[in-house]
Image (tube, rainbow, N blue to C red; front, side, top):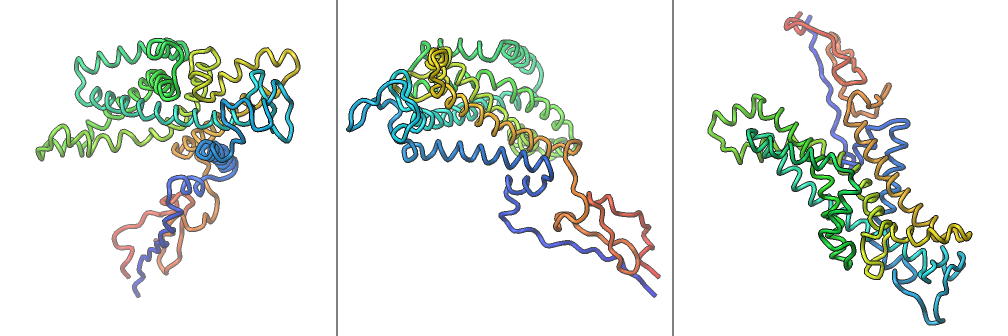
Length: 352
């Protein structure tokens, strides 16, 4: 009497469950899921506020009066001004909401610039090696040795003279942050490229006559950039702090060109000593919440990507792990980690 080894493969989950963020949420459990969801909620609120700032803000970021007359300076929270007004007579709520749009634009431009330069230099340095690799490593290490905020201040002065218009200031702040971030992407991509270029599939591509450009773009680049989304989320929070630091020290965007949280904190220093708390609390709270949300997302994704830090599911996980039967008679066994439940069998195990 013959028994057959029977394997049952569950159906693929729907497409929306396989989306990057949704898939990570379904993989997480316990505290990891709580951190990830909290980070996604805070980050989502920040993105929505930045995108719909013209609809959410009751006034313009540099508006000082309405049809009833001037707003007035250092007014407490009220129905007309939800979060009060500043010493200059600006509406605090409007400045905080418009400041989210400025922060988002700087983050996007800075990360795009740093990602492009860091990945390109790291790929070339790790693949070709030689004198190019040595020069780039020395230069990036020298940049990495400088304090990030001090380097950003120097670059902001060189690029824009300290302050600039909205788009000029955004580009200047983004380039300042880019110089700080490029060595991080360079190190990660270079290390992965040095490891991948010695793999068997890369050697096989060389044997069949593939050129350097095809090997770098088709084989090395795809595998060397897998961890970059994790670094992007963490660098986004660092970009917020760097931008706020530049504005607080007076090297950011002109206050009449855009709302910026760091500049508002600088102007609120004297208010705190006189008991006017709302001009400093709400811009500072915005910085803290945005940085906290981005950091929670980055740390949670890092934990889920690292098998040593990932919290494993126990018991039935809703069909995410395939159930594989190797026991004669059709009994099914499945381990919580996929192949962990398999038992060794020989080639004759399926014959009577």
